[in-house]
Amino acid sequence: MTTTIAVAGKGGTGKTTLSGLLTRYLIERQRGKVLAIDADPSSNLHLVLGLALTKTVGDIREDARDKVPAGMARQDWLDYAIRTSIEEGDAFDLLAMGRPEGQGCYCAANHLLRNIVDGICKAYDFVVMDNEAGMEHLSRRTTRDVDHLLLVSDASMRGLAAAEAMLALSKELEINVRQTHLIVNRVVGDLPPAWNDKIARMNVPLLAQIPYDPQLVEFDSGGRPLVELPGDALISRAVNQIAHKLLA
Image (cartoon, rainbow, N blue to C red):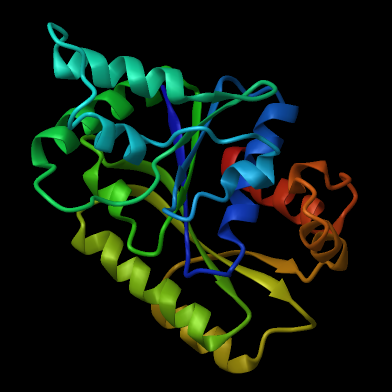
């Protein structure tokens, strides 16, 4: 059975970093076959994981308009194209969803894509999905089952308000979420007392506070893959503790 961990938050809160380091945890602990899905149109997860990115599902959807060979069923071509677009890393795979639809109707193509991507996910023990703020790709999955939804905020009221909005959105989209957690990133010192009241009203458990890590900033500014961060880095230790709580 596949365990799905979906990470969501407004841009700049560190959700892609969290997704990448959760993937690293699963690889290092040899928990099974791992698929990382970059469902954010900006497609930055491959940089965190230290992989090249050649093609996205969005690119394939565009190609399906005029590149399906004569005599080949569209579904067969899409299935082949998506499976060959999966980037293979060291003990994990990466699938990037890419940009949203362009002009024209994509309903039929999107229906085929949903079934193909869902079928691919079932072949893995763990799926870690880095989502855009609207969680569009989560809502389009045919199964819509998520074991852990991690709402990531930075240490600002704007970030927390965005996480609260995404919590409401997850219910409107009728995503089957088994557990929802709040994570506050880049925390310096203690959270203000007003945060405790806000979090209590959200009725979502605060899973972790990730401290601000200068070492992460150094890696980021130098363009180094964040999965190369040492295990004793502040954020590495924090994410390992998060993963242990989720999967204990």
